[in-house]
Amino acid sequence: MADAFEKEDDAQLVRAILNGNSLAFKSLYFRYAQALFGYLWQRIHDRDTAEDLVQVLFARVWRKRESLDPGQSIRAYLYQAAHHLAIDHLRRKVRESEITEDHTWHGNNSQTDELGFERKTAVARAIHALPESQRRVFLLSRIEGLKYSEIATTLGLSVKTVETHMGRALKKLRESLSGWAPLVFLILGLGVKGCY
Image 1 (spheres, rainbow, N blue to C red):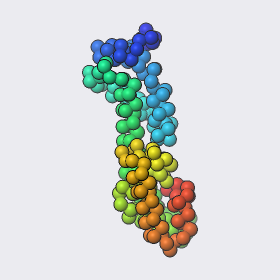
Image 2 (image 1 turned 180 degrees about the horizontal axis):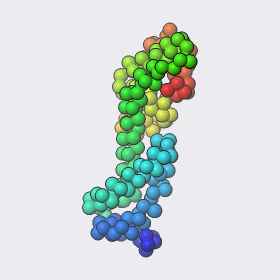
Image 3 (image 1 turned 135 degrees about the vertical axis):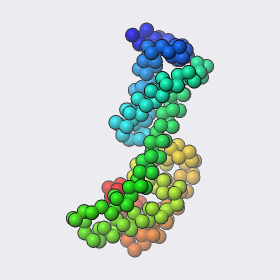
Image 4 (image 1 turned 90 degrees about the horizontal axis):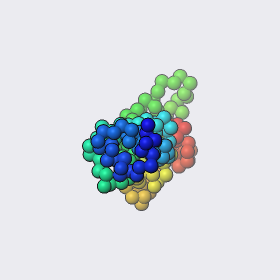
């Protein structure tokens, strides 16, 4: 049983895993899986995806076990791997948002009135026209609901840079949508999330 390794320290577990000991690996999994799930869930706000990413993470650890170093903290290694998985996932979502933007905003909905369609089109075009760095920050903030500190971590930027990108994005959107005054309030608040 994995319990045989319950009292072993992390370095001893890693040494056993390096020798292909699957029970040591299970013990490592039970030691860290729940905490890593919580870490990922806080960052991507999707329970199912967080669970999937934990499985991906440990599958990679087992496949690449020969590269583990008993002299290095396995805890730090696991959290760094989880961090990179979260970044990759969020970057994919941003790319998907950009790719599907036209479909989301320009769908054929017979119940959508012409004015509403024009409003959504105006917002979509304004967002799409933003420079890539500003658009990513805007989408992660307003669509994913991430805090500036989380966006900074996700994109590898400083919080100050995130604030600068967001400020510039909002200024450009206000200018682009000056003819649609109510939309500015949606963009500044949470209303855009509902539109997307």
